[in-house]
Length: 122
Image 1: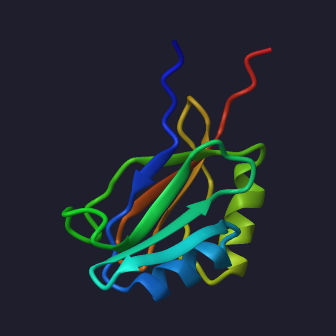
Image 2: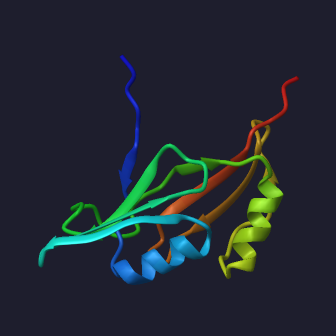
């Protein structure tokens, strides 16, 4: 039996600001629905990913900005860094961590992301 992670809740204070941020760095806005006044569900997916994030109102009780360790894998950390900076994101310059090249950034609430280029072990 496969067990797939397909959706991760990211706590934010301002849903529209967060949605604008994530779409500005290339995430696709898949859904934006309010089934009730207390719930707003926004699903966003990074290009090529089988896992999405959700932000919204009434989605999670976690504190906005409390998420650490979210990680995406890309073919080129340098290109990812350049794309983030071009979108106005304060990403870190690419670092060689020994197990890959990384750039790091935070969303407007302070949720922390890592972007990794896997090492070439061939």
